[in-house]
Length: 321
Image 1 (tube, helix red, strand yellow):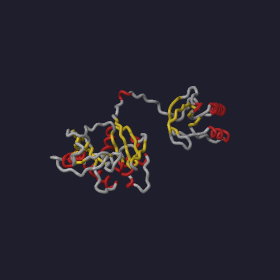
Image 2 (cartoon, one colour):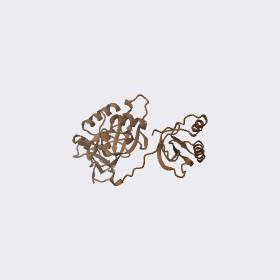
Image 3 (cartoon, one colour):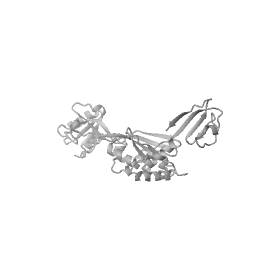
Image 4 (cartoon, one colour):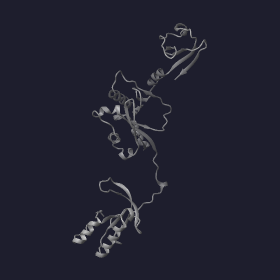
């Protein structure tokens, strides 16, 4: 039965003018309104099917059926409301909700989910939009939805959003719970249109990430396009770090690992006598650059950092990674 709303005031006017009463559902929110309606029904011997939606103080009327419905009040968005339903005329029921269905939880297959952080990086999205554009949660979700049409917007919405500004770069973030398959789908194309996806709490077996340097004065757009192309060729999503100019990376390949190791390994040596100069410090050690001035005089070498500290020839060597 299609619901047709009628107001109590309209019903009273129809009874006064003798017009046909059109409607099968009425909203009642006070006990006085309910008593007035029942008096009209009895006085005019009305018949037909009509359901009363009882809210506020009328909701607890004896004999009413408590339930939850999706309703929309004037100039408001639709939302769920706890209401009571009641036959206006006993035995002549109008529109009604479907009866509740019992669900046995042990028979429901649980879907494994994982937390996913979505991050929209302003400097990698600016070139996609006009000047002065600013991201909002809705615009980020619209980008994700357009890239993944088989993922429902309801799956990726509902999370709390927050914004970070680091070195004049704005990052808009949210964390959502997704089925593992859906999370993998987002992560596989992480970085597309400047939206990055990362599964939280997932171990990667100590895989190192290689953060790719920019080529000369490479712009954000060129850097992002180049790295995303490399990522897709490796069938891997881009990684993002918030800070520095080289902020895009991928799991290190054997070629990347060699470069990674050479960039982040060095030796330190301390304990040289104060009167040693470059020649004494580097005896049998190869060449060295000119001394640098800092809080205390020290010498720099491509594999060594020499710091004169005390009258001793005992050397302490330490390998740092």
